Image 1 (cartoon, rainbow, N blue to C red):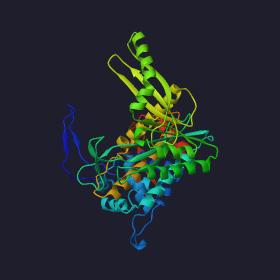
Image 2: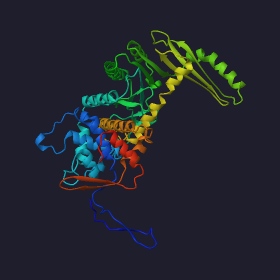
Image 3: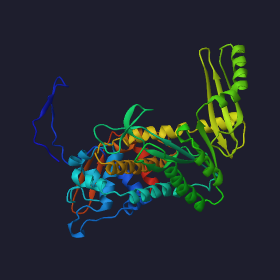
Amino acid sequence: MSDSQPVLNFPLLSRKAVHVDFSGGSLSSDGGLLLLAQLDRSLHFTEAVAACLHDPRRPASVQHSRLDLIRQRVYQIAAGYEDQNDATTLRHDPALKLAVGRAPRSGLDLASQPTLSRLEATLAEDECERINAVLLSQFLDTPRRRPRTVVLDMDTSEHQTHGQQELAFYNDFYQSTCYLPRFLFAGVAHERDQYLVRAELPDHQGEQTEAILESLQRVVSTLRERWRSVRLRLRADAGFADPELYTWLEENDVAYTIGIGTNAVLKRLAAPLCARAQQAAAASATGEATLYGSVWYQAESWEKKRRVLVKVTVTPTQQTVRFVLCGGMKGSPQELYAFYGGRGDSENRIKELKEGVRSDRMSCLEYASNKARLMLAAVAYVLLQQLRRLAGGTPWASAQVERLRLSVIKIGARVKESGRRVVVELCSSYPWQQTWRYLAAGIGVASR
């Protein structure tokens, strides 16, 4: 789209003037969106998400279908445009229009910011639940051998709010006014990535065990319907320590490692291990030592004793003791604690959600709209995860979402449309052409 603003003069060359304006025509900085859109079509992903939504609009007045709106919003987020105001100009972007399924010049422009805002405002609770089921199905339908074990990682994250967002509360732990969305990831041994299978935005920050159990029940039952004999293991930090959760996991044959806080009884039980760690540190040239052990412990609110892993770390300046509750798993304390430590990868995934697709952009006044934003960011993230899986064997196989976007999507493109065809000319100096072609072939794009 041309622009009539004055020409800018850049004195970069000594012999020639350099004039810059915005009259380049039908160009896009996101030519790689076509690859992401074709991957989406092959997975039928946004189609499944759109099918979760009820459309209360009059059909005769609809210009933008629910599917088009979902694709536009998800592709924008994936390309780094999390702000809905970006749609004011992006609705004309030729690559985005093609990705959504509209001709770049003759096709109707995409939805405006108010239309996308109305989409978020009308996303209901049961629709969010159905979208979560679609996220889980993406994990289940990913081609793989039948797994023997699936590891579930559950965690929350601080999403700071500003102003008067509905149902945002002050959190003493984070010392901020925030939302605390809850995420559940699923992973299989020998696979590089953990898949986001559930994203939720609780409407309060108090006791949530009942909601957590409902979420786990849906995921666990679905996993066992698909893989009847699969072993399930759950990891979570001390924020999820609750005897009702332990009992549910044991009754449903889900092994677990869950962090727990310290108390006087646990300190007393761990005292012999602490003494040995101090002796080992004193005998060490560095003055440091780490020892692992386990004890049997029963809190007053528990109906039985449970195994607690103990890790004692001694340095010249301090001693640190950590406790992890373990159920349904065999192995040495060090092996089991190392398994628990693997939950750190889910924290990396949450970091990607926040930095890569800006899941923490919760600037709406209404709680429901912010929850919708979280769900659409989750959809964009899972689509980018599927792109990363497709990139196995390439330099992008372990790339963070931000690098994946910069490398695969952010490609300058000139888009031409005639009566018979649309031609997209990607930047000739793009450095990863062969890898990009490899990915395109991986989703069935023909070449000639």
